[in-house]
Length: 326
Length: 250
Ligand SMILES: Nc1ncnc2c1ncn2[C@@H]1O[C@H](COP(=O)(O)OP(=O)(O)OP(=O)(O)O)[C@@H](O)[C@H]1O
Ligand SMILES: [Mg+2]
Image 1 (cartoon, each protein chain N blue to C red):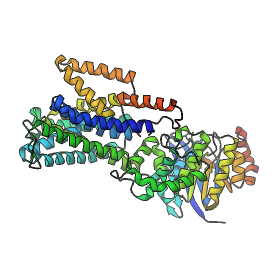
Image 2 (spheres, rainbow over the protein chains, first blue to last red):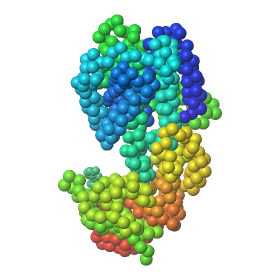
Image 3 (tube, rainbow over the protein chains, first blue to last red):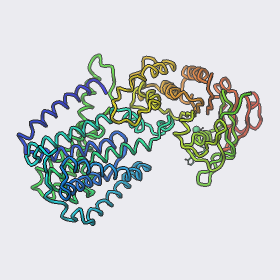
Image 4 (cartoon, chains in turn yellow, green):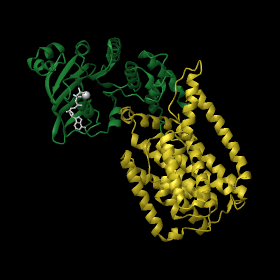
């Protein structure tokens, strides 16, 4: 990472955090909480596509299963919210182990197809099995008291709880990328045969990345089910998998903040376009096409590229442009 | 005569009815530089892929230090101490020179699955990484991205990365391909230095390099071993002259 982008990253992080603290006082908190859940989901997805180069088209499975498990355990077993979320995340991680094990042997379009097919199985399971409530989903999920103390029915308390979860997830992803493990992931993305020839069993690294991504997607889904007090088929439907791809691409694949920005853009768009009914999809499609055509690196990717071009042109700047996301 | 370190017996590989490697016997002696030569498409790279288990042989046995490694997986072969390079340069393009070498060094720390640990913990490898980088003449390039190195330096980086594993045996697939005169001299000297206490099996088209470096030469044509011996023997073999030199590779 060049100095320019490193500095930019720190500033952007500080600015975003400040915005996140002020935002619920100016905007409807539920809207921001929704955006935060999807931002975490997109970051988790980005860990796989941006840093391992694996395009999953079935991430709704982990988001959805997290959502259902938390909603069910909190409602039917009266678990406290923190335990419900922990369970939702754990089940998503387990599902990630099984599905990941089946999928990582494939690559490219075959990997995408296997993940999609497996996710569709989860969708049909959610549709058919009794505990998920079929078409109705699980409604009126109680938010409960965090650690038995904080009343999550208070919008601001809930908001800061969600912000905390988002920051925790974001930190885990950031650390993963900048860990010894993350270094091996980058090597695999750059040149897998070479990584193998250096003695790395690349399948095991890909599997761990897959499981981490699934677990954090589950965490996002679990949190979402408490925010909306609802787990529904939308959470596990393939369009949810598509949406997270869209958010990540719009924001900037393989960049740290890209998925966050992309999630906020997409959620805002949906919010303001809601009155146009089914046109939302069409407008989204157009925005998506424009994004792909005009800024292929996504919003954040283009900003990083712009800063780097300036850094390189500046006198005395020695280090050349770097791939986004290092 | 030293003992055999890597040995292949009846090695065969068929691709959909086409036999790329046909009943090849090969014995590489410990501490030597052994060259594998032959015209384009002779099956040299395929032999490398078989020996390092990037491909599964259709038939035959591979032994390393007397141990049957035919059923092993490629990463395990690397861990045994047989490290290969690739015909097209194999660096990690968007990592720096130091990070490239560090990837090879970090496996022995045993923290490569630690996603919760900071990468700052890898800094203690920088001393060794920089030594290896200097040893291949890349001092001063530590922080440059591999993709920005000229081709000859990329090949040098590849060797530094390979040496970081301290392998007993190196398999080099055309280390001189695409290099200019100066680079060829530099990499030749490097291979000679490296081979002082290691075994090298190398595919190479540049015959003067082969002549000066190798102790033993195996000539492969159409997947079969045509001749074997030192440069004198091989280059005077009439069959070799016809099959190999005749194709314009002299
Ligand atoms: N995966 C594969 N599937 C089908 N055929 C293959 C495959 N790999 C190699 N071959 C064929 O096997 C033959 C030997 O190829 P190989 O790459 O081993 O040759 P080589 O001796 O390394 O040639 P060069 O000097 O050009 O590198 C060629 O005819 C090639 O087309
Ligand atoms: Mg070849």
